[in-house]
Image (tube, rainbow, N blue to C red; front, side):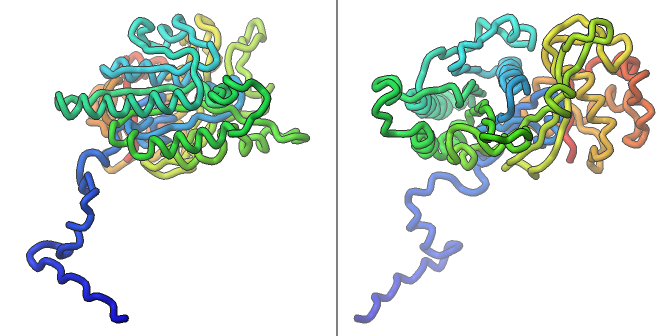
Length: 374
């Protein structure tokens, strides 16, 4: 049988009448929905590696061993989103919410929304409803809400089937539920521009003594890896014991050195690396900078120092691009005060440990700035 002749395309429009067939197409390729606005973390080394920060309209996975700052980075993201005028939500399956720590990181505990008990199914159903509500709000008011949801953590979240049936008759696996949830959200995160941050623990391989072999084992199945647009792998900078930061006088651990790699980044190149230190006690002398005291969380002075002394640090044609903390996007304008304090990219003498506190004094708002290399 002869094949029916195709309808001739319209002659007056690009691609003829082909585009008219795609009746379900919602957005054009240059619509703002495809932009990737960033929420800077404020940690220079990490923001540089991420090409600006965590992305609105996408999912981010933070994976690593215990005490590698996964939850801490999640809390920092929630706090920064609040300072940018956004709504921050915490799904806390571990019961580890600490309002004092959140305040120390710059957040407002009275303005955060917390869900302390939930299942994988209820979380994805809530996210679906939240996406629809944010989209509806934008269509009615023209205002785009800045929403960040922290899921802390994937590993400790159960399923409705497990809750109803207990440990017996486990027909549907947790990985299958998460896979279904990722398919349910689909492009809704992007359309609503909600940032979903997921913390995930690595698992030890049976019989493996080397920690490096653990990173391939994390709960939740493979769907999360494909679903997340950014994946940040956190490790100890050295061995489990060697990465500890000790107080010089008491020799007691006050923190840990962290190194990481951007495993996946749909907003920029992957495989970028970064380093910083986290502290569990405040008010103690900084182990590297004379006259500077540590505070709970990530020491931004050290992160900035690590960035500027990194031999692989890259600078764009305009050298420095800075913006004061809390900026809405990932692309920054010049900040004359900071540029004057830092000088030439090759002038690393200004970044010696001995005079780094003086550099901060010259440009005090350096600690509230975020850097992005072109």
